[in-house]
Length: 215
Image (cartoon, rainbow, N blue to C red; front, side, top):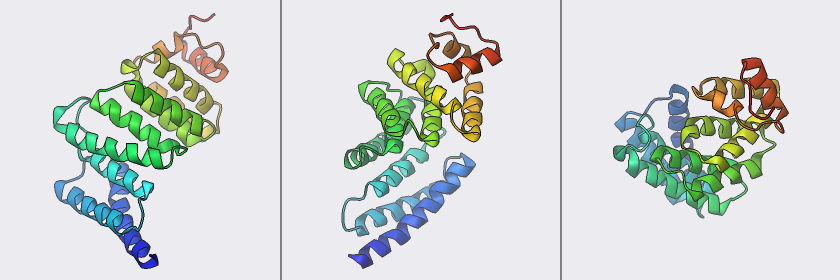
């Protein structure tokens, strides 16, 4: 068993190297690079003696990155995104307290153009499991900004709560949350909601010159 884990780890590190490079560049991988990464993660999964949720997550992310630049709802990207979703779902069942996988589910469903009960539950689960983790709050904020126009009221409330906690977090996270907010063209729509209970978001809105309807 130890030998199988060691071999799996070698292939896993190879796949993670490619993922890290794609995330850094924020570019879709070249087909050859994607194929190498996919073969590596498949071997890592096959060599590991039991089902490993972390390996499933990485395989899902490799699928996800295949069509990273495609538009929301692009039919060409649907296959890779659905494969990613299947891996994320399986990983979430294996470790439901891990908030990052729930964010992956919400994000890939947004890219599929589907904001349904599952997507909203995923956002809520991510918040519940990681509401005191600055990086989770930032990821929920970034996902919410990306999906804002598609989100119903329930989803917007989860995102607003995450934004407020993110702004109240350490200075680095607060700065990144603010930067993410500034990328939202309709950011005034966040402030033009009832946000009296969100002191840090309300302060940010006031500094930006947005008047909210809660006063």
